[in-house]
Image 1 (cartoon, helix red, strand yellow):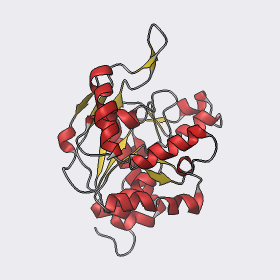
Image 2 (cartoon, one colour):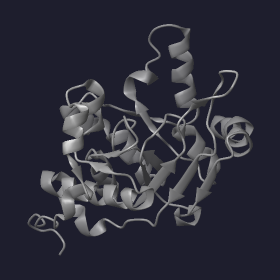
Image 3 (cartoon, helix red, strand yellow):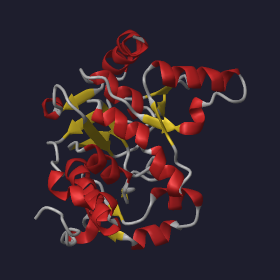
Length: 253
């Protein structure tokens, strides 16, 4: 209930009439059934603007710690909001915990949900497309759902003349679904997951036209990778055109 209240009462009017957001290719989203929307990530507002412009509800995973509501009144409001609009917790602490933390998202997909995810794992530090995390492949293969690539444009926040943060004419382009069922055997194969993830990132790049940097955006943000080092890792395509690895024994050909 709360999802529709916030969507139709606040986010859709604001996105459509205030921000003047547009969506191209919405017909590529199936009317029913689980699917994974995989988008580039330029600004935080995309998480609210894109779902507001689509007919189907979209579930975005959020950091698991945000659901705890520990701390002050503000954190409790955030926790209530995330639960009220049907978001699912995602453990991003790394290692085994993160793998196990995908379970709520897989469950949402298996139950027919439309789930949004940012494979880069963070907002782009400079507008370029960065290396995708393999979670997008793990989710798609575990749940047996297609991946629908999305490209966001002009979604960054700007300041109006009176200092109010605003978004001007954000645009989203949605591509055709990617059927990954032939690669189900890659679900626990590192090289296979890397290759599948790169194919998803290629599809996003085809829509966005972004320059691709073969490094994680978090490395640039944390300072562990300098701007010059990031520039040195520019590639024409994610995966650099690599062929798919051999399927594990018992996999489909």
